[in-house]
Length: 175
Image 1 (cartoon, rainbow, N blue to C red):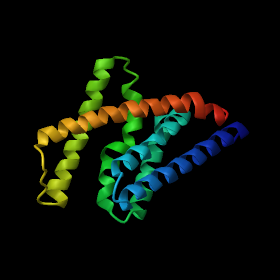
Image 2: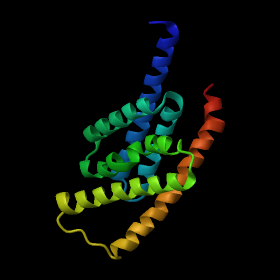
Image 3: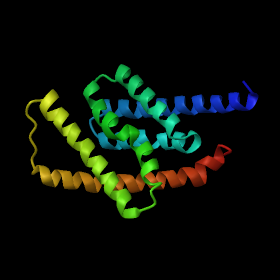
Image 4: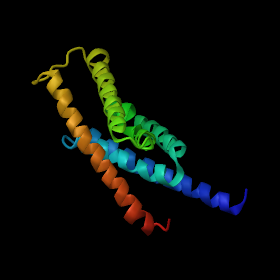
């Protein structure tokens, strides 16, 4: 194997391992800390954007799968991995493809549909499969609307993190 390819493969493996470790740490913290769970789920996905930028969506998908597998082995509460598996883990890869469309309204429609579908599957799993009775203090429609507003804020923050990575961090690592 040529030296150039060996170096590139080494960078892929090193970055993938680092991102997997950081994401698993975030997922572990979301699992054991009594507060800030949503923050740690969101943070666990931000690291993946480095893999998407540096090595593309295929490598990022491998890191998502590795993170899911390692987290499934290490986390004490396996059910808490559901939001990562069904949405947060692959969102950076999904966002990468959707934003290539270059049509603002269509991009947001697709993002909101994907989020709402993932939220619906999560709700169904939690309420039907794992726990038989899930009740909310507020009407479900209001909770979905609030979750979508939070998602929009998350997506904007994710975009800002990507911009920061491209403008600042990427320069520091010599890319």
